Length: 396
Image (tube, rainbow, N blue to C red; front, side, top):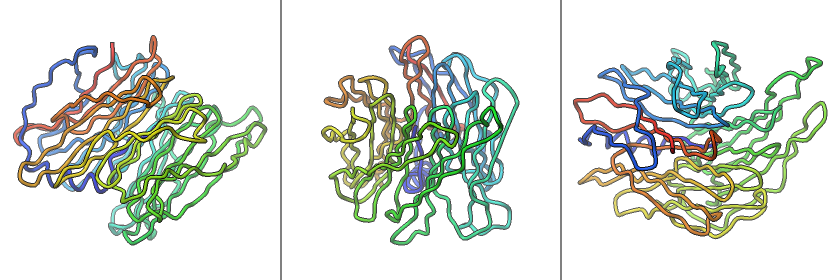
């Protein structure tokens, strides 16, 4: 599951947010429960949605808060498909950023960057934290230590079957190229107390690439923007046996070519995979029905406008139903941030879109809570006199 707010988009949103004045009234949408507030930030804080994940009846929503030069990562989880949520939990208070989440083995896992006090602005570390859905247990492991020369600027995370987790991140130096990393980690020890070894691969990427991960069963996919200006999807299989060996498969490169202009959204279920991506200011989507070996026709969901851009921010799929959340930002005379939801019920052959207007960023995922339901969170923009709020609703 991917759904990440990244550097270029965050920079533009930050520049625009000071200029936006919109109402804070939120009305119920037909077919969804009434919106509930997951978080109201302090008056001086900004609340920025980072990711939404769902697995069965469990839901995880992670966000970033900014106040007084400090950024925190916080989380709320639900065990009943989003009807009720546990109290918020602090995940990271050391300049936490770039958070992504998934759910497996009774934990909501959060991969995120952090920066220790005194480290330079280009020095970030990466941690994967596991917070028990129904209890206080927390486990954490550092994949990259803060204090080096790296700049962890993107992350994504996915649970792969019952024995593996995968974390991806970008080490960005803001030059012509960056490095995309993916590491496979164990989920739980086997009955003999053994765990499969870590597996890591790195790929050269475009200097401002996003990164996305998705998994279905024992299969995982990594997507990024290459140095030759294309979108590449690299499959990995996790095999049986005591080591649950990770095997890379041949990559698929989409025929599109151009400059990355936002995030990549990636979702998988069964043999189906949906990808959405920002390219040349526009937002496109494709669906695969053969485990990512090939992808169907490209659909342009949003068209960039004269002084702005569009970007996918999340994608998910269940059966032939796919959903993509996207945003358009820009307008230096009349600034706008418009959230959109696009859905397909025929494996991406056609798409229907709904403008959510001044919602801020909206992300969603499918639960299996009494059937396939869409759950969504969004960081509602508010007037200059009101704190930002994090809202949530579920499909009825």
